[in-house]
Length: 603
Image 1 (spheres, rainbow, N blue to C red):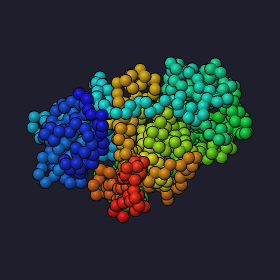
Image 2: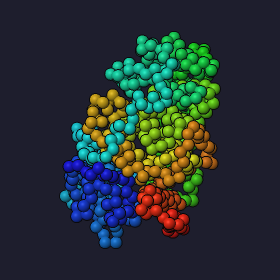
Image 3: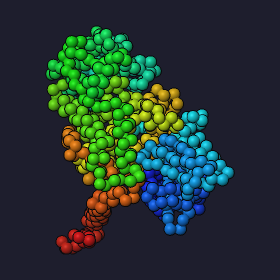
Image 4: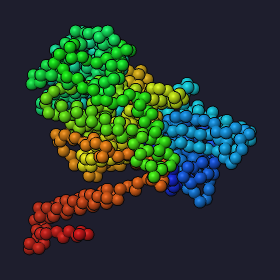
């Protein structure tokens, strides 16, 4: 079964949306059916439940479970509530109460989600009524534990645009003016033998041979050698990314690695030093020596300067987001809001990431130095810093397709561990590898879009859609940890790209205030006074807090733009008709008044 080319569906329908509104996004939604279904989606079971809504109290409804979603429709005449939750969003399913539990609605299921909400369903106590629902949900929400294919593999949606064609590394490097006399493209990693978490195609200094690269790889964590991410079009300074050097407690040195960093510096004759930004706090970098890691010391790496950016590790970020969820769901306590928000330290972390990216961008933009960025393994904080700095420096990445390329390049191809950080299809909710690193990056992008409202082609819906499908597993874009794993699983052949959904209906994701600018560098203000909690994402499930959607100013602006386009089209048609008449001698006007067509407008 295949959908029409324009098939579209937005997975984050709000809890209080009515039945009438749920058919707006183009999935096969027959109102005679109880539940909408995507092509390839199959219905498993349904059951009558009581949904314990944290905002409106208990609501009687029927829950339908497919291999992709949990869908609840209210059975009460005074409530049109619908819940539409992709199973990939579920982090944990727990049984609530026991067979002898007393109290109304005390027996059922408690579901913890990855998108800042929890769901509670009460069921009848007799006959183990929750067992089958618990087992089915567990089976399809966590397919990895049950040897089932991911829903993304089963998705048969068809779009009129192929999102897998968005990113071509050769074309992207060519856009940057590469290769050139100082930088070359190497296919040393085409079979992922040099580094199994790097992409097949890498850009490295022209003077470094493939044998040099192999020797450097032995001294970098996970063999993640320094490679080029971005080159400045004018001053030719570069952003290079890698992992930490394997210095260890004994302070080991590697002449090949030291020479290689000097070769990177010498690709630009105008600079005397290579700046190294280590994303970690100094104390963490020192502690990493105990496990064989470390950092570049001055005595070993001449002509370099090292700065620590004090961005904390994945465990600190995970705990910080948990605290955010505690204060935003289900209720927001107004009286202590500011102190509660401060206690999460979330905006503090956002500030540190943005501050680090600003330093990278400023160093490169000024032409004073090329920059090397790393953290421990070079796939979390490093990706945040390089991609945000590139977004600040290069206006191309602020377009819709440019941003998609940025995500494909710096996050997906360079091995951010999406499967481990999100826990796709994995029931181990307490896994220490889980962390909201990519969410934090998107939050930083949102903060920038608030400060520069005309600089980005995409709108807030675009960013929220990306985050929703980060969890949903409906698309193959964020599945698996690295490019080599995706190739092994034939992801581009067996799944649909998220960019297919977005690029087949771009108008929905466009910022009407966007003004295209070339070569403008954006420097956001990263002080706490200018940062704010992203309410439309973190508190969107609360109908009392939800901001007005859509923004009335934005809506009116869109209407005026459409009106302008309509008048321009009508004017062009009249001009064409007029010129046709003038070119026909038999209809030549006899007087000047006949030469002017009358254009009637509302103005």
